[in-house]
Length: 363
Image (tube, rainbow, N blue to C red):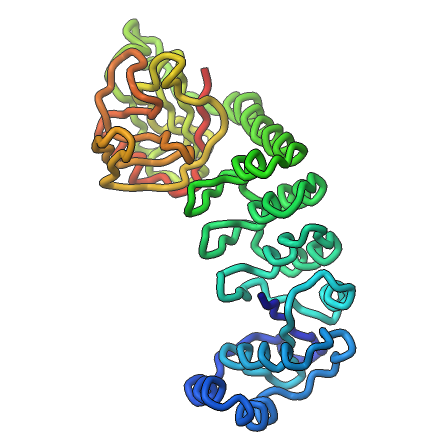
């Protein structure tokens, strides 16, 4: 595991990383003959770092990490490239907290982990160093090659609700899924992080209550939509109401599913764009979950692994397979937990909704 840092020395022009002008010769020299690299690559390309007192004491470790840094960056005037192994040593923390040290938020190791992920993987994460990385622009929602984000690594390392609150305030998403279909909340339950699991549940509930109590009351219903809702066959009708202007407008998307009326409502900005019939889960065994969700996956030709059924235009909401898709829409709950939609309405949502769109399922 390595963490890439760069000492910032005041210059007139901004410091920007650039690609190495000769990556192939340096790569050959690095892999074929390390002594040649140390003499030519290090001497000709990288000036001597002035902060050896703050670096780990293992010179071989420093030399090997320099070899990796050379392939991606070319130091410019007034700039030093520093790379070292991540540990919980005070020297590492001191260098991270230094105002003269600039952290590259896009640096990753071989497993795709960022500096922020590597720090929270410690059983006792150092909060000031993490705050420094967040101030430097570290992406709290970045995922490694296994799909784990920083708060997911935090759930596997320790139960630290204070640090979790710091990530949530920085915009960390709690609905990110890993490749093995795990979320921060499922990891908190798996590793018995009771305080963190409670905080994640309360955060999700607060988002749900905010949308129900604050966002929805501000939606402006036009007369055409009010007349559609005042029909005698509403909400049991199979008809779909659309506002072409709202569908083509620019704004934040929000999908609201009502289990009691078996209807769905797409909101763009503060205007209703489409009201459509849905068919949700039947009974207590296959009940559609309520709460706050986000669309995490879109699959045009999805097929259920559990029921071996085709689910066109699938939009996943939960890690156990609940989502919106084309299906037989009855006017009573009849699905196995998913939200069935008519093809034209589902295709419209699939086309315009991006991954990450908020979906609220209410009674």
